[in-house]
Amino acid sequence: MAPSQKQPPAAPAQTHRVPSLVKYEDLLSRTRDFSIIESTLREGEQFSNAFFDTETKIAIAKALDDFGVEYIELTSPVASEQSLADCKAICQLGLKAKILTHVRCHMDDAKIAVETGVDGLDLVIGTSSLLREFSHGKDMAYIEKQAVEVINFVKSKGLEVRFSSEDSFRSDLVDLLSLYRVVDKAGVDRVGIADTVGCADPRQVYDLVRTLRGVVSCDIECHFHNDTGCAIANAYAALEAGATHIDTSVLGIGERNGITPLGGLCARMYTADREYVMGKYKLAKLRDIENLVAENVQIQVPFNNYITGYCAFTHKAGIHAKAILNNPSTYEILKPEDFGMTRYVSIGHRLTGWNAVKNRMVQLGLGLTDAEVKQVTAQIKEMADIRPLNIEEVDTLLRKFHASAEAERIRLSPSDASLHARSSNDNEGTLTAPSPTATDAVNAEKSRLPAPADVSAALA
Image 1 (cartoon, rainbow, N blue to C red):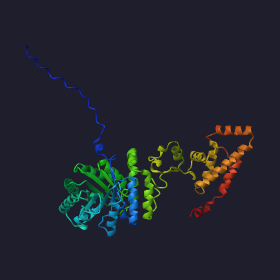
Image 2 (image 1 turned 120 degrees about the vertical axis):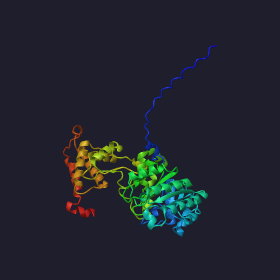
Image 3 (image 1 turned 120 degrees about the horizontal axis):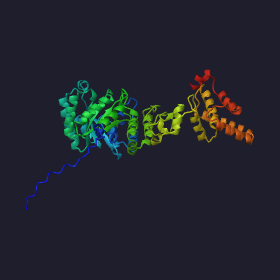
Image 4 (image 1 turned 90 degrees about the vertical axis):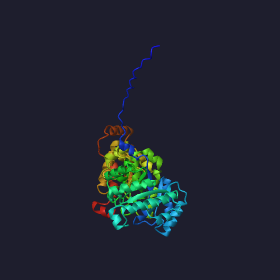
């Protein structure tokens, strides 16, 4: 038998490489997988007006838990006897959220905190040269040694532990990364970055978090103060770069200008993934939580507050109003109904458009032709040049105009009324002269308004 001939190797199957559409940055992003550490009962207590008694703290904690935050952070039990008692009381509520307390990276504080019943400790120590010189007076070698000692103690108690630098963005980067590498090896659950004075911008945040993501294997928490107005943008940039946890407070209250507001973060994250955020948090509860906190710290919810401000879903300009009535997405990125809020189209002003007035007529069950709606819109504008009208005044005007128009139609013979209706519809889009009866009704309403010289007194 002839020896078998060696067959040439088969040509490798040709493969077609499809260019990846996934960017490296997208693999890092946690904008669709993050946790909120709600710090109203810690950072919020540092707000100038804040004084939360035990009953109030419990009410806020329950409201936040019902909203769905993953963590609730409490003031250090070392701060006062009442703080210690309140910490224990909240830990006994049996909330779904994990309860954390924020303490100095010091063994004395840690020993007290672990006995309160909390689920974890948030350790913090200043690392910038300013804080090392003027706050605690320790060098980086001491900080590393102290951090490992306290972390090991907390872990021995079976509790979650986070270690955070303070004033991270004014700390030496080499020192900072070296410290984080040490505590990561010690087994922390999270490391924290804190923009303690609110000096960072989103690009700086992204760069630091992305760099840190390549140094540690644990989770990354971020805490942003709002002194320069970047707290929400910084939080989003941090999540894009790979951070996993963001600190918030209700209405952003805290030391000085406060921190990332809970509502503001929810609004930003909702735009990134509406379904994820709606499935994660009870967004319709936000207004009640904000009202609860606002009342207790004796402030008003700001008029332009994210989501819940009184004008957050108010539309005024005629062009905007027309588009909103046709499709709300034209001028809204947030759906008010998802947050338990209501859209409002303002019409009692000189900028109003006839489409908005027509919509109000429909809501009131009043039928007018488009030409008639344009007539009454012109009258509203004229009256609003004296002063803005409230909705009750507008509704009264619309009802009287409608009644007068109906009376005029009835006055006409049936054939004349039919001709009038056809003529009105044929001339839609043009502004015809109002009927004398309708004009008289509008003029009667105008006579009730103060003269221009009296406007300031009327509005005072």
